[in-house]
Image (cartoon, rainbow, N blue to C red; front, side, top):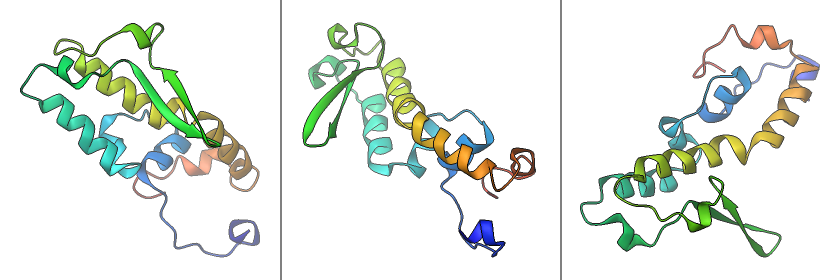
Length: 132
């Protein structure tokens, strides 16, 4: 409402969200602004010295929705793909992509459509990710 009424806002958007509004690709490096714990966990998988298969990971992500667990495959057939030392980088990027992009696509789009009714999208592009 403050934007609509022309009231100056002193709020800085999270970097991952600003990037989404500006159409800037979001990557693993943007994950800390969304979920620092998830970012730290993924880096632990990346730096794991042993056999990653011992962690019993596959190419899926689970999330709770209205009291029930939902499994999302990060790639077709992901439930049957074990994360190994060879494919762990792909797994890490797929998890980051899911949380930063796929999972938030509808909400980001709805916010951007609403904001575009108040502020022309071209004006937003005058700002960088950290300035928005």
